[in-house]
Length: 463
Image (cartoon, rainbow, N blue to C red; front, side):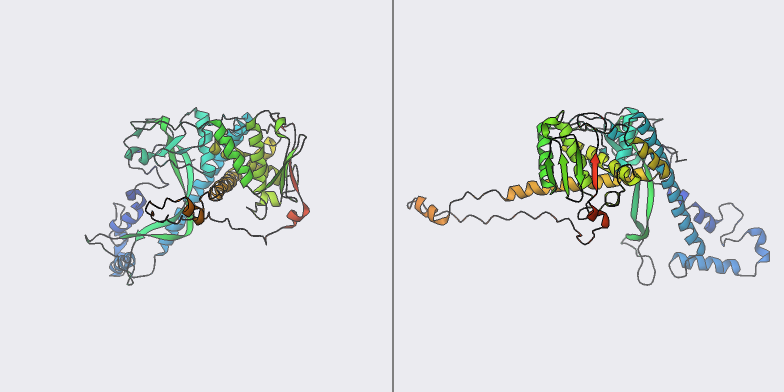
C-alpha cells in the first residue's frame, strides 16, 4: 500500500523518505551502537573476547577513512543504495497500479476526465497554487480525476510543506493525492582532489548537485486548496471570451502544417499516406466547439507522423480494432481535452463505448499504459500549441512596412524645420526554435498509407 497521506510529525511528506534521522538511523546505529549491543567499532560487546586484539579499532579507523573519502566504498553502502532504488520502484509500481485501477473504474462509469464535456473556459487541469505552473502528463490526469471524484471546484494544488511555508495548513483528516516525478540529480558533500570535504568560510561542509547514474522515481503527496485553511489565495483568473479561444484554435489548425480538407459526409480521419486530415463541412457540426474538438483530435493523430513526433502507436498500428489502434485513440482523445482547455474552447467528447473495452483491457494488461498515454498526450498538446505560437509570431513579423522611402520624406519635409535624429534600426524578433526533424526515420507503415478513421455520426455522442 502507498504510505498515509498525512504522515506523523517529523515525516517528510514531500518525498518518499522519512526525516534525516530516520534515513540515517541505520548508519548512526552502526557508528554509536544505539543501544543494540554494539560498541563504536560495530562489534557486539559479548563477542569482543573472540576477536583478535585491535580488530575493532582497525575497523573503526577504516570506516572513518571511508567516510572521509580515503578508502574503498563499503559493500553495505552499495546494498543500501540498491535498497533505496528497489523501494522507489516498489512505490512507483504501487502508484501505477492505483492510478490504473482508478481510471478503469472511471471508464466503466463514463467519468474519466476526457469522457466528460467541459464548457469553454472551464478549468479542470491542475496547476500549482504558488508557482502557477501546470501539472503535466500523468500527474495532471490523476489530479484532475481526483478533483472530479471529490467535487473540488478549485484546480490549484500544493505540497504539504509548501502549504505550511505559505502560512496555511492542511485540515486534519484530509487525504493527499500522490503524484510521481523523476529526480535526475542528487545533492552531496563537495570534495577536493584529495577526497577531503570542501568547507565554507564558517567551517561547514559545502554541498553540490551531481547527476545521478540512474534517475530516481519519487512519489509526493499534494493537496487541493479546498483541503487547506489559512492561505491567502488570489481569486482564480476569469476565462477570456469564447471567441478568442476559437480564434486561437483556427490559428493552431493553420499553423500545424497539416493539410486539412473539408468533404461533405460523416467521416473524420487522418491519412498518414497523404499526411492530411479530412473533416466534414463546418455546417455539419452541431457547434463550433464540436468542430474544434474533432479537428484537435485528428491533428493529434497527425503529430505521430514519422517526420513529427514519430509515435509508435500511430506508425505501427495494426488497423481498426487492434490494441495499438486503441492506444493511439486514447492518446489523441486525452490530447484533445488538454489542448481544448489550454485554448479555452472546452471539450465535447465524441467517443461513447467504442473504445472503452479496449482501453480497459490495455490498462489491465499494463498498469503503466495510462501514464504513458498521458505523457504522449502532453507532448501532442505541447507540439500543437508551439506551432500556434510560432505562426502568431511569424504573422507579426510579416506585417508590411508602411514607412515612406527616403525620397518621399525629402519631398514632404519642411526645409525650415531642423532634421530629426535618424530613426533607430528595428531589431528583428528572435526566431522561434525549430523542432528537430528526422526525415530519415521512415517506416514501412508510413509507406503503406494507413489511415486513422473515426466512425459514426459527427454530431452524435459516440462513434
